[in-house]
Length: 275
Image (cartoon, rainbow, N blue to C red):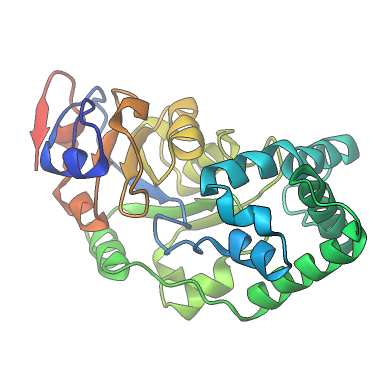
């Protein structure tokens, strides 16, 4: 566990003191999926763009690409979902994804055969998701088994359009969870607390006795805070995370095994926890 005030993930890992502010006994752990339990896909977006001959993608950073996507295709898709009042488990059709891609490519400055490129770009994503198998991070299964054996309730809450249960079943961890929930629809997805609060309700535990483990501040930490849960930020897939971006009440761990060292005392007010 770490404290705010260091400049990098390495510093966070080496300086392991954190003031805790919660006084409730831990009864449940709720987990994100991508970047928390599973290794996320790498910079596939840039790779696909370069394959399409969009050379400007070579000189744009990952963060810049993500920003352009957020302000173009993702914003349009969010507006579409809100306007059409879609439900929690709605997922885009191929035509909707192609329009998303067209708007994104246009924002990148692509001109000319934009419609054809959008179709080709989407075909690459379709082929990828048809065959890709995300990798369970080292040590996850064992930690989940240990937490379960220790009497904790477990849940998964993820921002995604596809049901994660087949993937969890493939890796023999589905039976460890009391609740699995997902959505990528505004109002349901994180940082809204909806899924976290519903998971706590289904497990029959108060939100304030839940620990939520995720890998992003803007979605996972904020959702946990809004739900009144203790946020734990795992940094093993976030090498550029700056401690200045982490709120003071967040427990930071580098590896999921560190969860086994967290006790109720770590969340007591006015105590220091050192791992």
